[in-house]
Amino acid sequence: LMACSSVLLTFKHLLKLLHMSVFSQSFSPCGRFLAAGNNYGEIAVFSLSAALSPDASEASQKPILNFTAHDGPVFSLLSTDTHLLSAGNGEISAWSWAETSLEIPEINAMIINPKDNSLIVGGGDNNIHIMDMETGIFKSVLKGHTDYIHCLCFKEREEEILSGGEDGAVRIWDARTNRPVHCIEVFKYEECARPQFGKWISCLATDSDWMLCGGGPSLSLWHLRSMSPTSVFPLPGCQREAVFYQDLIMSVGEGPHVSHCLHGGTVKAQIPCTPSSLNTLALNLKNSEHRVMTVGGSSHQIDVFTNFSYRAFSLSF
Image 1 (spheres, rainbow, N blue to C red):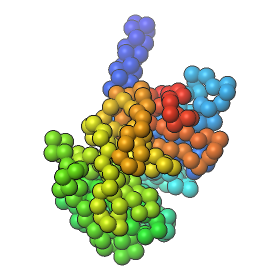
Image 2 (cartoon, one colour):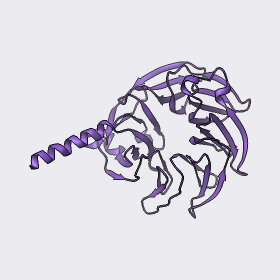
Image 3 (tube, one colour):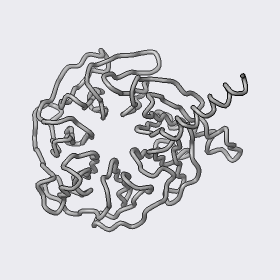
Image 4 (cartoon, helix red, strand yellow):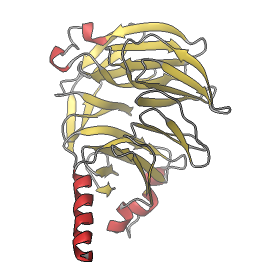
């Protein structure tokens, strides 16, 4: 009987791993740890020091801490100097000693405004909410999107918030006044539009006067002063996360690879990954000793790249 119970538990665990997807990642402020959230509401914390050690074993690629944080998927993780913030269906939690909740259905994105240390969140009620991190009080609501928000980013020099949503719009807001500045309906640009995939915006990134955005529309590079696309990247499927890195643009989405693109629109390389589809890409540039790229998606494994051109190993829930 005990043997049968053990086999049943092992089977259930394997079934859980088979259906697991990693939705979010965030590195600790010191850069020595990686937190990852999955579709079961769990957060796993990995030691990069152990995983990158010359003496690393299979056990070094397992979590040092694993806990259930939310009833549903952990859609977004964000690290501050003192907290790991996690967002799921209807709540934001701060770990470890402080905890707060906000009733927003499906919180998909969180960023920090480094100018005033406020937390900016977007989700299923179509609005952007701004919280004072010192008091835990939500002080502002930015309204303009007509469908739920997928992604956020912050332009520090101009103190602007950028938001992308299911409505196909990228909205730009003045963080000092909380007023809208621009609205770009990406799907209305012929060179970007892909009606077969829809109009939703799933990823946003900025670098100086440049913006990356994509989702239903093709991943494209925009010059924000002229508010026009300068390059459209010929990537199949919907891209879910994209980042600027040195002279490259790196992107993940449908398909088992990280795409390396040049600013002119050329796809330079596609680096194979373990998951068949990817949701999240993170760069740890805070600590040169633990400088890595990590990607997660439709698998219980998180691929780690020490050289961004090939996978070194995988962490596993």
